Length: 307
Image 1 (cartoon, rainbow, N blue to C red):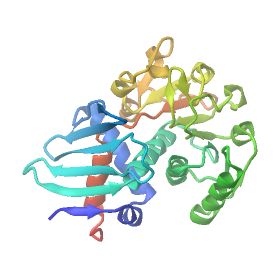
Image 2 (cartoon, rainbow, N blue to C red; image 1 turned 120 degrees about the vertical axis):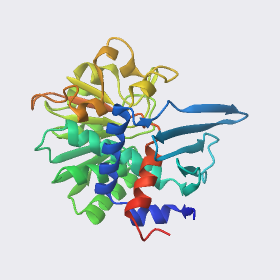
Image 3 (tube, rainbow, N blue to C red; image 1 turned 180 degrees about the horizontal axis):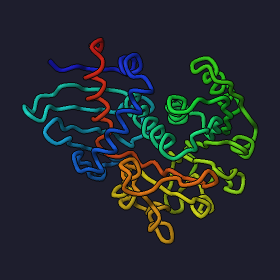
Image 4 (cartoon, rainbow, N blue to C red; image 1 turned 90 degrees about the vertical axis):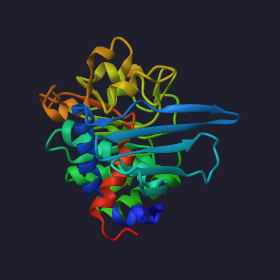
């Protein structure tokens, strides 16, 4: 029987700890070669593109996520999970929640692996769905004592801070300037749609960990080369996808490409992550292909109440 899941189903069944745990397992599986996850494929169409990401957990399942770039306000993503032994469709998720929580979970893994163990303050630039799931997941791996948030809309940042207080029980406040959001923070999240830098790396304190979620390409990035130059440790969730961006991803170009590490390799202990409290670490999230399907499989397995 195929399960059909809506955003409401995903929200009800998928908590932050489960999501982060699933994404940690996915990154390790990809590093070990058990999760086959090629870079995304794109089909240009008149007025937009159809984009496909796919993955295969060897011998267990395969599946895909599809979405479009036509700009329709009510457009939805589709995630399909097949049983690798029979080819049967086990589950289908329609909407935005699974993909957003997947991205948040990857960010949570990066914070857990890269941020200082005593990290307790979080600064966020951005107030949309992606910013929210980054805070949601970070709160599952560090005992946050305060969140500060800035975005262009005063109303949206105030609403975001109120949501953090109400749903996560963490003190949170909106601030008027990006510098005020990140100054002195242990962890910083950039989750914007800005094609130009929203952060000055000079505003970061020593020892900060940064998750970047938005644009990160040449001539279209929410941060500048100053952040990459400041990074003592630079990681991504998929080096293959980082190298496949058009135009190129900033961190995958010289002089930074030789320093870009695989987060899965860090988790496996094959390469070092943070080695001192003063280091600045940066995670460039590209959305490892197959992770939405991995998360859908985990949701189906752990939640007997999803129908």
